Structures are given as C-alpha cells and as structure tokens.
Length: 186
Image (cartoon, rainbow, N blue to C red):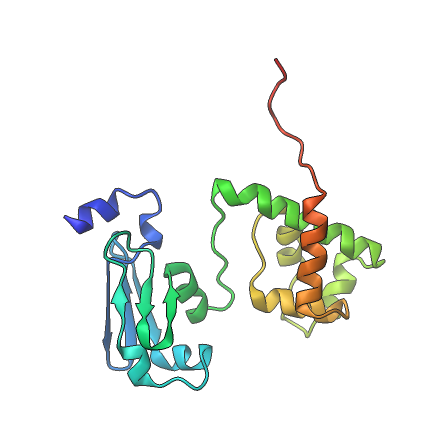
C-alpha cells in the first residue's frame, strides 16, 4: 500500500521507498525502482568524524518517503541530498515553484558580477581550471538551475568574498527584484 501511495506522488523519483546497507554501500530505492548506490566512504567524507556504526542506524520516513533519518547523527537527508553527496556536480532539476526563485537569484548574481566589472569568462578564469564552465555559470544566471554549495564557495572566492557574504548580498538583491508576470490585466 505504501508503495502505491508513493508511486502516485508527482515527484516519486525523488522519494525514498526503501534503504539498506550491504557491503559498506547504502542502497536507496525510489518508488519507481530507481536505485542509488552510495558508498559509506562518501558519507564519512560528507560528515567527518562520524563512524560507519553511526551511519548504519537509520530510519526511512514511512509517511512520505521524503528522507532518511540518522538519529545518532541528528541528520535527515532526502534523495536529492544523497544524490549530491554521491555526485557533487548533480544539480536537482527545478520545480515550477522554485523556478521564479532561481531566476531572481540568477539575475541578482549577474548584476553583482557586472557591477564588479567582470564578464562570465573572467569570473570562470579566476576559478581553478575545470571547476566551473561558462555554460554552467550561464545556466545559473538565467535561473535554469541553482548552484551547489561548492559552486557558491568557488564563485565567492573568485569575487574575493566569503560564501556567507555572497549569499547575504544576493539575498538583499533578491528582495528588491520584481520579475515581470505573463498575466494580462483585466
């Protein structure tokens, strides 16, 4: 019954139906039977100072399948977070609700970059080779995707800012942005 309920969800591919550990790998299964195999070494790297024993005791959210909870670590991780731990370059596709936020954030970042007198290429050149492409930066500025925390950190460094300063600056700018709507006035 739980499987049927989860499969009926719009975002079933990002829900967690089951999870198990075998041979030092966390196996996570979605209601659509997509499987994520996450080596425990990656979880240990994600949360330094933790042990395999702490990662081995967990509970899957039985109601909505939204997360796995590790009580010993006081940690909840959903499918997108687990996928990003496995592949740091993974960027979650945006839902309609997040799309406007991404466009505002991208617009605020583009304005900040231009105020600093930098082109996309100049910014990318300040980041270690291969760490960020102009294509990825462009997708971020257009609002097609949110940057990962790693990307935010690299961009902040290239702008000679701390990641928190960059995020605070972007948050201040986003509050003042008004996106045009496609609605016709009555």
